[in-house]
Image (cartoon, rainbow, N blue to C red; front, side, top):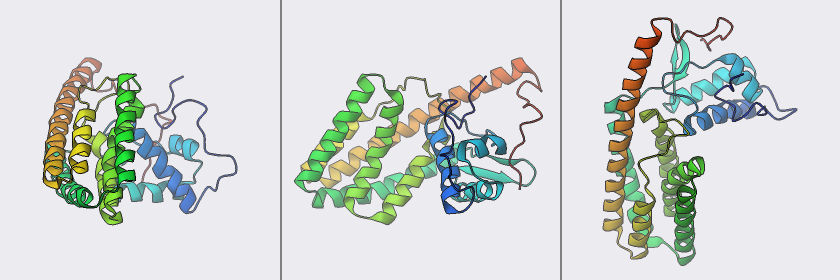
Length: 259
């Protein structure tokens, strides 16, 4: 039996005795969907099935809908009166806007951090980048991807601006929507070397260089995600052509979340 995308395994369930409604339940709904997106267990455009979300989150129908509204506001979910809820799909233009926004915001954060970083923070950054390197080297792709994304949030946190940190986190959460890479796929792009160079520029108090390196790094990532998306779309078209018009139809008992 196939494992639903909101479970890492069949054992994943909401904690016993967890509230079925209210902010705690809504947070669990958000968490299971965001984790599935970040781990590439669910693809852009995939319909969200209420039964699967209820089992994974232990949340009521109202909590599921409120959680989906929060995700829609963050740009991760699309809500349609006719089609229900689905994972958002980002167009190439939206992808460009996301990376443009990241560059503007992260440039400000990196420059500030270069002027204020303390020795203990610098040691933490270097240790973090080393952990990321080891994760890629040892083939722990899920951990490596998580650390690569977390690196940019960590820079913003150290710069001391909670608002910018929140915006950067939201933009990074949308990153998997820009490509359809599968979790087991070994990434061609690894930003660990760039991260190390950024840290050393910050250590040298060279905010301009650190910001420039970060910009080049993000543009390279943008190009790689665009290439992944194009390849995945070609695979999808080929699969749909082979399956015919009903090839991807869901079973009748898998009801989408509807408004």
